[in-house]
Length: 231
Ligand SMILES: O=C(O)/C=C/C(=O)CC(=O)C(=O)O
Ligand SMILES: [Mg+2]
Image (cartoon, rainbow, N blue to C red; front, side, top):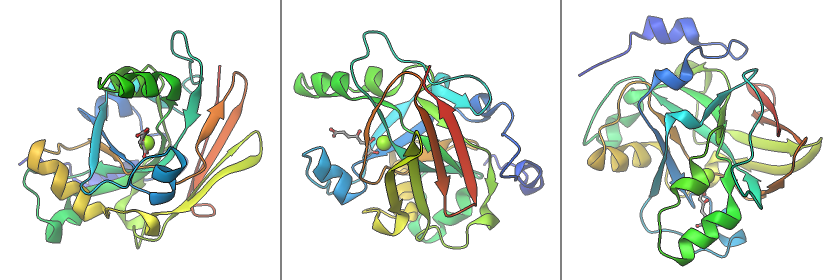
């Protein structure tokens, strides 16, 4: 079972130093949908009975300082979604919930940028959301936080502002499915590999951003902060 040396992870653990080569760091970005009840409701969706999973390609990564969020072709409505990211530090499949946290190498803060109108159109046709969720720059990410930097992953505040106005302000205590449940569930279908990123879902308050908007988001008050502009 491949395991990234904790010493290697620790070298990267900084909330100011961007994680170099994040895009090459893992093989997949596993996203959880509708994991906060208020967000499910704001889009008129039911709360899922099992974790709702979709993927983003690693070509979607955008690291801070590497450019702006790009609008996908024929974009009509692109939404921000602030999410806690779990970086896998130990590969595994059929992971038990009781030992799932051993597979967490660290954390980051990410935006699950979504072309909402396209997503709705694809949903109405029963088609996958891949284009609405996986376009280039649809996964802006912050630096890498060593697992030791978060004492209790069930109580992390995540917030997001657009042009200085607070749009999202939630807490992981409101997640429907907790991190161990998510890692265990995903790994029954897909082996979680070192460096993979799991986006744990967004709290309520999602909404559109436009060209030249500035998005600032953070974990807790000052644990990690990211800033991205829309091209
Ligand atoms: O079901 C929908 O209409 C939309 C769902 C999402 O975009 C799910 C997420 O990405 C999320 O809950 O974070
Ligand atoms: Mg999302």
